[in-house]
Length: 392
Image (cartoon, rainbow, N blue to C red; front, side, top):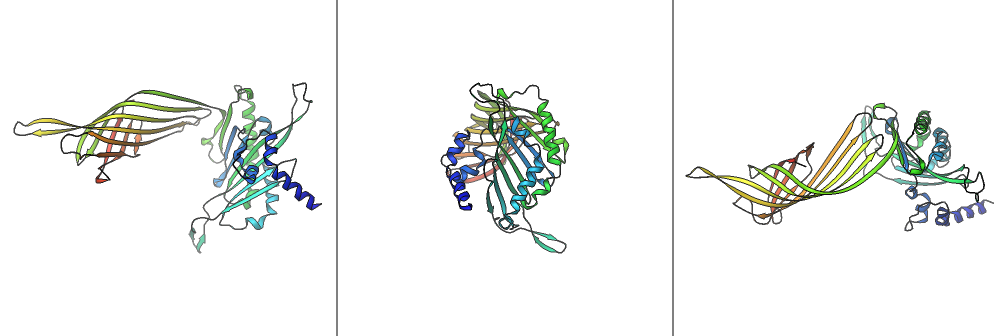
């Protein structure tokens, strides 16, 4: 009998691609059969994401396809205890305290539980010096992905489908935990309470409809309530735009403080998200003509003359801005540029001069970035700082 069961499991694993196709799952055709069976990335229909940050840096992510699947996961404590009991049968495979463990747990009510364990050794050994001497220290956390199909009962409007037909719904619950052997400690009621609060929020959403295919998102921090982002509809709007661009600059070249102006064109791509948090993510591609201005004092007339050195510069600027319902706001900006000297006047630059700008500090429309100037293959390498005023 045991041999027959084992053969049945092998047959089921060998038919992975067909079974998933019947359940409308997304399959990576170039993946191995094992990856097709356990890889959570195939579940493209899981459009609702709820993140729960627990104490001691433990984290839980709940992904579901619809509300019915979510309501079947309200008792996460029971799931944790059941999974922990099954993992205890494999404790010999999880006893190495220093390895980072990833466990994929496939839970299907219509079949056997299937478990894959992968372990990774750290690159080097870490220690912590305690009062009684040094002790080994594990830094990387373990992860557990519970993947499964739930069977729910739904009334069908189509006359050709029997009333009360069963529909299979996929879900994924991911745990990032310091020690997977202490998984049962997470079943202290906190997750069940949070899931119940999320259900009440979902019930109270008056602008959400499953027919609109809108995605829901929520973030909970069980130890710091000010970082909580209540459940809301997450909508992404993408937009490309083309426009002129102007900037002013002040930089140090060969210990000479000189001004510059940049004018050209900009192609930008902006993604705006709208939910209980709002974010804007913009990538800007700029091609500009950038003259540097040097002023020389002429003797004996004691007059000034201007020397203009022109660069053609390509710049890439990435801007991120996220606002949370708690009132906190996060902004981030990255800058990268590459310029080539196309017109030379005076002895301020050599022929074949390049300049490179790297990420620095930014505040609103003002940026302070490091700039490096050299000619040919990094000859006469000169570091400096550049202050940019963005007139966009």
